Image (cartoon, rainbow, N blue to C red):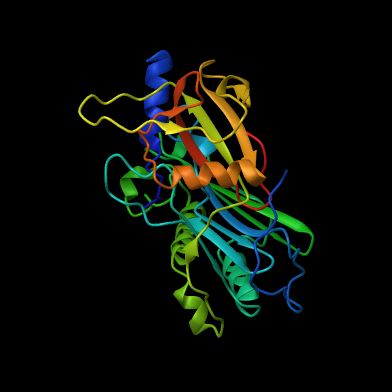
Length: 294
């Protein structure tokens, strides 16, 4: 299984090297299930995220969960990444909707993979001979209860030499959850179960988390300086980050985010931004429904 990570990783790495070496509402579409498991129509039903691993400081603030299903049928995943340099400033995030019948089918698929009998913790790195991998975190919330499974280095299970200390039960659980992750990356099986899938469209979001850092300068690729369309200057936006006081994290919403997004659509990860006083590089992460803050 290949874990997709946004190409914004390059921008974050540059931030780190330069330094020291209103909650959005769920967008429309879909319908609230009226039968099967009890589900919050505005809450997260199932999410798969990847945490930790060898990534630059601040990467978790920009990473997009591999899969998020909401109770109204909204599904949000990372979109297709364009293999160009410099990459677009805005990360590719996709949104689609599944129908009422599909939500219980996805829930049962998750339960069948092990998210039914209580929390699972397979995050112990001592029994896995792989360094610096991420931990896959599955979260299922139905019937007023949240079940979590954490799996270190998910996707390396085909290499028996990498799993020398695992019991047969642990190996079986890991393989079941790896199969679930693969199914969540391609929901075509939902139609075979009698459900339907809506068309994938770009996800814009009603707010965004941004990281404002030192300009990334590539002398071989000079960039147009973009005007910062928000009245508030960089120096007073958000708060300094823990890894570099010159890098700030802030949240934009409403008209501010709409104005910045329109400008960012023609920017790339090397584009410098000017507030009329200083120039900065900016990394963007549209917030998903239910997310907030830095």
